[in-house]
Image (cartoon, rainbow, N blue to C red; front, side):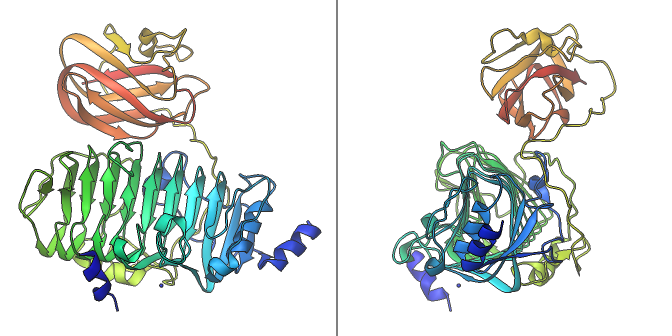
Length: 514
């Protein structure tokens, strides 16, 4: 199939002086850089605003992009880089500085935060040169084209990924971009949009991904399961062999996307992953949803999708397509607000809004395109913002008088403190992850819990799962502390598992309600 893919294709004063020499100029904010706000999972965990509130510069080369990063006062100083022209290997060199860590032959966003890269003017094209995000947070990339990035052949860049994220990346919003290749792995290309090694809270919106063997992945292997909370909406996937995306572990939300000519498989949920798939339009494609090429099952919740000329293969030991009549086999709670376009109009509204050079147009939620709203003017904190005091469920706190236990308890803390009513006492794991449970002597019906963090530690908990400890079933997953609801379940023990945090979590209250 890879070989056939190729046949289917028909892409300070001293600082100021130095900046000018490498192709970067200072400028004021422009309308294109100051409109639109993040959506989906990128709004969680403190939000994603990129370089909002900081200086704006103009760059015409990759070296100029690096120079802008290296000229900041610090690695987290907010910065917006407006890019115009073609960025390629010939004009992308390594630049050194205390606020950057760059490399030649790739646009390197490494060990930094609070940066926006946005195409302006006649457009921005990254030609055969990828964008690499590593150990970074609060990054926005908008209105650019990245094409023909190779992992083999000449030239190579970014491991063959158009946009690649890895190693503790969180809060990234990629919007109105065009990512394209000219073939599959045998032609030297890899993924268009890859996330691995603890990449979380990412949104890809209003973008075009096309002409590639691999659309993208979340998790590089069946053991790389620390990634997730990714939203894909109003994107067009066209002429892709597989991985739209490949999801290993974690949670993803796909809504209002248009998938055309997925040649081998589409959304591949495996290794315990959970995909919520709402109001998408699948067209002229094969095996658009399921678990493929492995016996490690994944799960999905489906609603409102259109399957137009979609074919399904037979089930086998390592092949579990969701069709021909896709049904939900899990539930996925979504923590943010969103509006669904009707699936029938998705091809039209996506064709008018998705990709670079579309004026950052978005859907109005009623199948029509509109201009985006103004962006925020202040940068986001690189850590999670405090969670508001949760609205309590009604009824009695069932944790009163119940037992408690957990895993990896830190020295000097008590499991019992998770239900004692005093926010100055708490339970902590020995590290940044761990689990704590409430248990009863007899079966008890529970439909919601409230997690309160200790005073001074609000916002530290980044991601979690709630488990029926009797069966191991995941009742809910999400980010941030507060009120968590799920289908009413009768059990003897319920577990709150912290899967990610920005420091040492401190759980002061674990309340349970019927």
